Length: 87
Image 1 (cartoon, rainbow, N blue to C red):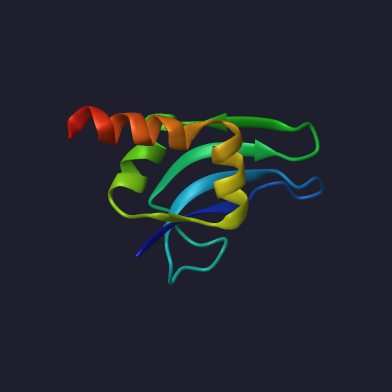
Image 2: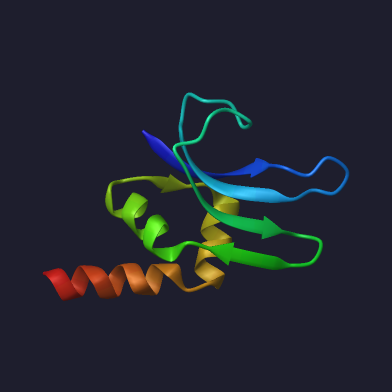
């Protein structure tokens, strides 16, 4: 099973990558693909929306924080739009 979760990158300041990773891997383990970036101090977010939608359509589960970040960026409205478009 694949999850979309945060992977810490910053040493002194907390900076995170949003990655698609296997559930059995640890937080800093090898990821399948990098799909975004999140800086909580500067409140900056970059999301690769097509990659996120791809993993969500394949059944990936976002963690709580990644879900909140994606919801704020309105990724799930695009997911619903794509599902309605193809059905």
